[in-house]
Image (spheres, rainbow, N blue to C red):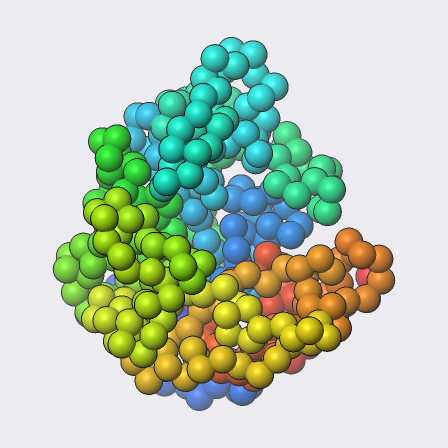
Length: 374
């Protein structure tokens, strides 16, 4: 991954043909550090520092050394993919402050859950572009950048990625997540073909490292059938809460749970259509009664035995998200040292990649550096 990141960036400067040639030799060099193969995924951008899923958050993530940026994708009424963690936007935009949209507030059932608020599929792109992003966790991360940035489309993110790759001289991967795929298909706004068309339609994303994610299963199988195995696009099966079912499975009346999917047999089944699993980090290294990270569960070894990579989510740099034994300072304080120590424990356990809200700390954990003094 790391060699790809550097070589693709250089090749972009020389055009698409150079990128293609670069990929054929990208993995030739040996890693310099023991964890050099581990990829850092910027979870919604550098979302610990800036409002999530904004171009500013993605830009900061790239500056901070992320290997991939992650746009979660939802649909607008007029069929445009935009970056939001969920289709309800009341918590991450200023839509509630727009009286012209007050009547759009409603209740829906999304993936079996009742949700109230404002939903992207009830807005055109032009209407969404009048809104501004807000911090999801204002009590923890502040509101200094509220109102500064707008919602980005996938097309804008791809073009931005091309510009950043040229500017930085290195390749940067893209890890889009298809959010609520069955729901959007059910209302006539299927996402999978649109996503694939966008990725294939841009010279950069046609060759750059791409990791498409979903908590559902059928759409990943569909994508695998379309792209085959010889592709720059890899597929990540996300794993939710153990006793929950993927939304598409539940919709079809199936009984498959995420717990069954993470058995050795279930992992072998996933390996038939996906390249990796993405799983909540505590399922890999639990926290014991003393607030310390315990021994790894068998899941990493089982996934590797099935031929799958393991991507852990999500590392966050504030004390409330850290094991008690790693916390320092005030209860809600930012804790870079603790976050780096936590990530390194998972690196030692054998993960292949991870999502973090603070890619700078993730990069230091991988490369062996310590956090800068505050």
